[in-house]
Image (cartoon, rainbow, N blue to C red; front, side, top):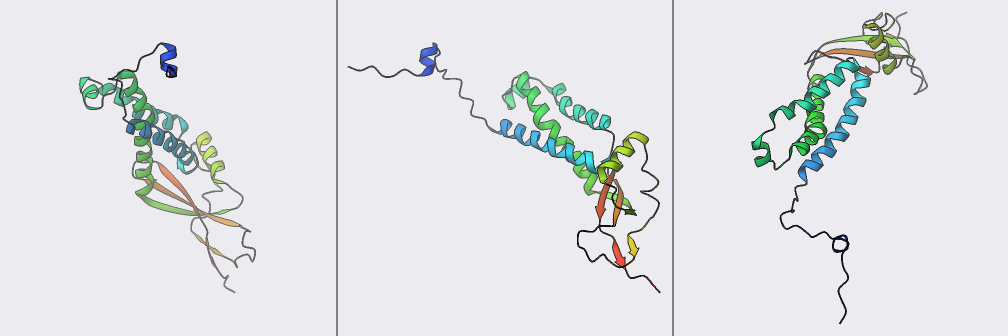
Length: 189
């Protein structure tokens, strides 16, 4: 009579616990989505929103760790999470989702848009770095208000001589930068 091959649990001396049937996948998926959303949000905030990195870190920490203050027996009962799992859930799911929601609301609901013509090659991240260091945009970036250039469009499609920098105050007070093409009008003679 042949003996059945033993599993690795049996070889290690472990027995399968009957009550260890935790098949909840939604917290893990929310943590993964939150992690990737946070990467995208940090990339976007770094390039498009005029806010210092210190404020970004403080906002993320506030959103990620504030949920840990409400841990209690009801969390264990409703969500079935231990304190350490609740901590990781807040850090990787709740914090990033609230952070993304905050900056999405700020970017979607804007007012007081101002447009400035900028001669290339000024890039967006260079303007952001200047703003972080000095607290204001360089004078060359805000010297020519408007979005219309009186000249013929260049025949080369990728020859960008001008860009339009659009600054809008977001719903939550952070200034959002946007870039677009200027409107070319023929010069009057």
